[in-house]
Length: 137
Length: 131
Image (cartoon, rainbow over all chains, first blue to last red):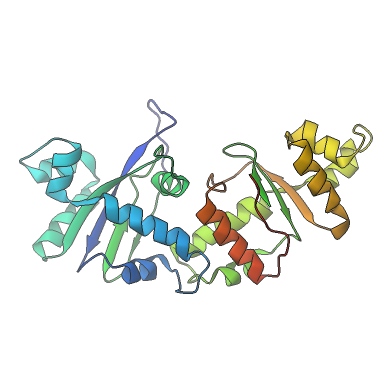
């Protein structure tokens, strides 16, 4: 758990990072999260999957969209993420994998998105790396 | 029934208090996975961290309030109609719990439907959600 000690508001948007070896497929995502196909939790993780899919952008596009920034992507990444995460993104791009960054919001009126926006976790398997450690209020 | 009293407070009414192991099994998630952890968190805020409101009433408040429905109304701000419906289920031996550790998504239809689906696998009959 992380505790933010500076000014805290009751609404938030938080960044996540997804790295994939191929496309961001639903079946791969469910395997990553540990949801079997008959699980009653499928609709909840479907909602998360579609939120992520709608809000994830290639690194360069993310900075243009959210930071109105262009140019030195490494520096921009370093300003926003931990060194380990930056390293993973750089290595992924070198290896020809796909790296995405996105944002989830806590005040868009969707409780599922708000929950995952404020949850902090990191999971990975051989096809997907999903970092939501920046998800703190 | 899951009543979100505010963003963190819940009142739940279920046929019984379900154990974590049976809730996990019915969730059909991979042990040790993120989904498994989420199932446990849902279980905790519905069953583990909820206190038995009926036991609390009988032990401390029965002398103070004329009946359980009145107690629910004044102590937990449950509307009178819902309080009467909950009271009518006492004779079935239901579990009535109050908790202050909600994960804040129990008025979402997708989430309540998923929870009801899990509980229906465990034989829950009276798990219709109301808001």
